Amino acid sequence: MIMLTTILTALIAIFLILTSAIIMPIYGQAKQNTTGLGGQQGQTINDVRQSRLVLLQGIDNAIVRLVESTPGTSAAQFNTTHIAQLLKTDQLCAAIVELTKLQTHVIDVFGQEAANKEVVPQIQNLIAALKTQESCSSPSPPPHASNQSKT
Image 1 (cartoon, rainbow, N blue to C red):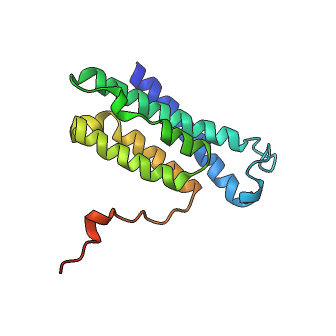
Image 2 (cartoon, rainbow, N blue to C red):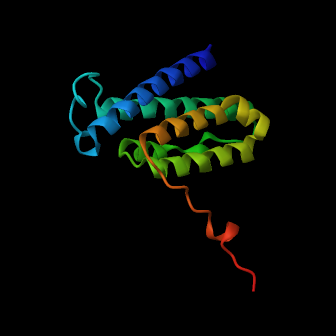
């Protein structure tokens, strides 16, 4: 029942975010902090931010379920406070990078199968929603990954 509620909440939040993603480009970045974004939909930037946080809460809930079912793990390993702050302050590209790191960490700790059942789809849904709101260039790989040259 909790999983169904989480999924339903996530879908509603995605709908709200996608709706706002259509409105924001029309009215431009300069008017994002106004209280109507054109007045037609009545959705404010605060509504959009709240929708992002609802999706992140769904991710947190899924992680807690995994932690509770996996001995030796702790929810403290998956603190998303920083991601929430990025979402609140519209730093969407940075949030996408952090969500990608979180996804990797969840897979590393719980394994691909468990992560895919509980958390990964929710993280990917939030990332997809954020990408519709913000044009981000691809994050550069870490210096140790591919930028080392052989001498």
